[in-house]
Structures are given as C-alpha cells and as structure tokens.
Length: 381
View 1 (cartoon, helix red, strand yellow):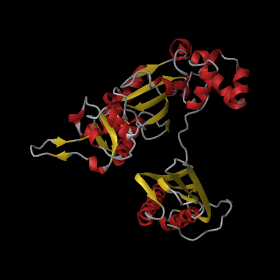
View 2 (cartoon, one colour):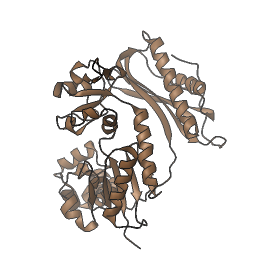
View 3 (cartoon, helix red, strand yellow):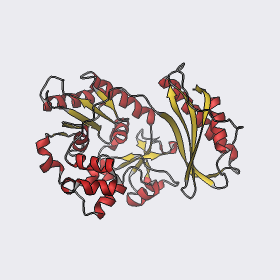
View 4 (cartoon, helix red, strand yellow):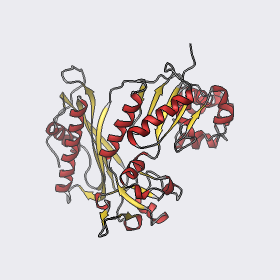
C-alpha cells in the first residue's frame, strides 16, 4: 500500500487578496479588511479612487483580515479596528465583501476538483486533498494545483503535502505566501520538532499555557514528554493525542462529503443596544437574522428543528437558549417565532453587544426524527 499523499491548500491572505483583485492600486500597501459599507472607496474628480484610512474609523468593529504588509505592522485578524488604527493609522480600511469571497472560494475549489475530486472542504479558504492515487510526481502535482487555482481566481495559495492531515496543515503555513512544502515522516525531527506547540492544529491558548507551565514549548519537547504524564495532566484521550500529534501520527481520512450540523447568523453591534430602549431597532435586526438563516437553509436544501439564540451583553457575558419545534422548517416566520420564544427566557436588563440566531438538528425535507419537543412561547422583541 503506497504512503498517503495528503495536501493542505490554504489561500494566501484570502479576503485581502480578493480585495486587491478589485483594487490593484493597493498592492504593496498595508490594507485592513473589516470596515462598514461607509468605508467603500470613492471615485475622485480625477477618476482615481479615494480610500478610507484606519485613522478615520470610529466605532467598535473588529478586523476580519489584513494584507501581509499590514500584518508586518502588527495588525491581525480579530483585532479591534480602533486598536489597529493606533498601530497603523495610515493603513487603508476596506469593508468586507462576503459575496466576492464566497464566489472566489467556489472557483478555487472547482479548479482543484478538476484535478481530483478527493477534497475535504474545511472552510472558505482552505481544503484538504488526497493525492495518494493521483498520477504524477508530488512537486509537479503541487505546481499544477497552484496554477489551476491561479488561472481560476488570479490568487495564490500555499500547499503542504505530507502523509497526513495534521502535518500538512502545519506545512502549508511554513513558506507563505505562494509556497510549497513537502515532508515525509523522516523529516519530522528537523522540520517539525523545532516549532512551537501552537503550530499543531488542536493545541489552543489554554493547552499551550499549561504545557508551558510544564516546561514544554516546542513540539520536540512535547514529543519527548512522558505519555503517562500527559494523560495525567490533560486526560486520557487528549493526553494520548498530544503524544501522537508531536510524533506526526494522524490516521484521519480526507472526508469528501459532510453534512452541516447547524446554520447560524450573528451580528456585533457598532454600539451597544438596549433591549427596551432600542426595541424597534433590535427587532428589525433579529428578524433580518432569522430571514438570512432561513435563506441559508433553503440554499443548502435542508430544514431544522432546533432554533437557538445567542446574546452577548455589554459586560461580555454570553448566553444561549434553544427550542425544538414539532416539525423541521426552513420558514423565516417559524424560525422568528421560535427564536422569540427563546428570547423570553433570558434577562434583557443590560445592553447587548451581539445577537445571533442558529438552526440545528438539520435534515433533508421529509425525513423523520425523534427529537424531543419543547413548548412554544409567544413572540418577543
């Protein structure tokens, strides 16, 4: 049986790169993505485009991503826009354009599918590809895939190819942007072990902090750690996984088909809204979220029975509630009624930062389920 060839393809600074396709004059400049529609460029009298700057932003937005030039200045995804403005006030600020990003995502995945259908979709800008049975030398295949993506979208990507998904995920990030990294198991000591444990997908901030407290900062140190100690500190399952991951062991297959477990929409407000004083505005936002979730369900050809809400207060506390309907639905009005019933079960005495709506328990129309039914309340908001 041949050794597996698993690729992880990661688009380079995807959202920012899509924006540079629209605004090529911004290439080489620090650009942050995450503004409101008000940050759309203006056409000036001389026909050129005028762009908003981070220094002009006022509000509580969060950046979605940034170009590599902006990242060099300390800007990163998830950073507050005002904080980014203090670091790089002259950086360009553009609003997000998810329609454009989704379109480019479909294009690059279709291009790769033209080479092999053995693709696992991991999000808007990354996929795993099983190349084990695809004819061709590995480097040539990687270049062929990269060129297909470039031809379809005009964008670059980085690819890691190794015997498994865990290593390939690490390797796709080693030579960004526009890189190719190919490793075998024999390369792990030289190429993987010197890296920080945070490079392993599945080791988050809490686990890495705990490992640091145990004197473990690199993957090499994790690989040398006593397996029994890891299981004692992290539990049997996660401790055993940490040991395997440090040695590059990962038998997970590339899953070419998966069904969504839930569909959700949420929004963070530019300024906190009070459930009572801003009732009308919140009601409009709430209804729009339900309509967007319903539209997503229709597009994916599924219906759902469990309707949930998510609230984040001005003190950053987050609460969720859900209710299960007698019958699965993709109807916006039914989702709105059930979400409203959920809303009646949470305190609304503080200002809100975020509001979200989720539908889970997804199934194809006509399928029967045995999920429990919760009583329905009256509409709130």
